[in-house]
Image (tube, rainbow, N blue to C red):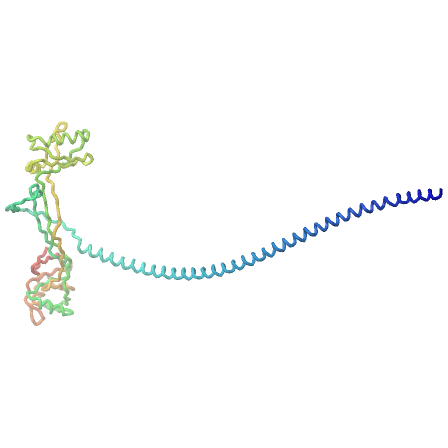
Length: 382
């Protein structure tokens, strides 16, 4: 009995002790799992750390390579920049040199333009050619094989020669000797003292430089088959106006003939008509006016067709070797008497003079234009 009780007591004790133990085991299992999880996390962290260090090391290596590359590129950039700066400096120097040369060329061009303008001014022809009455003498026969141009046109050639001239101002005299050596002797003198009764006049001799003169031919060609007309304003349409004009010029009763071509400008009222046969144009041109069958009759002006050509243009200049200019002459007496004294003085061999061919003195209040002939130094005054 006692044993049975004792057994029951042990069983209860065992049951009483097993509950906390079970809880302890559960707690232990829990912590084991936590420890395992911690170990797993630790291992994962270690692996991640290793991966991170590897990545870091790789990143550091790449950073080092990039820095090395950057340093090399910087050195190369600085080197190239220095070279470019040197090239820019050289280019700036070249540009400065070119600018200096450009300025020099501009100055030279300016000088050349001034020379050109001066030459153009010297050789420019601006003269009013006087009207000349011409007398027809004969017709020059063409070669047997006459050209079409010679058959259709009447030609004339005019030779125009500009005589060298000099403007003689007041207080000057122009003197021409018979011999060149006399003029050369006088030009060597700094001044000449001329006796005029009780007075003495100092004159200075100068060499004469003439402006360039020209000689050229004007070839004039007058059409035998064409005439020009004007003063034909368009009272009707342009096409009808042209037709009426052609019809009018075709009438033999009005002095016309068969028309080959007709050109008409309605804006200017001018035109040109060409006939099929020669002779018609010449007869109409002599009339100077023509009555066209337009409206109640329109009187228009007609005239010959001229073509001009300038040929054999020549320029020439020179210094008269037997003539010289006397300047600085004072009006101590009247013109003729002073001129006589000058001629007497320069005719004497004792004054280095010689035979005087011509002399002309102009008082201080006058001026005169003198001309030199081409074949000799004779002087003509105007």
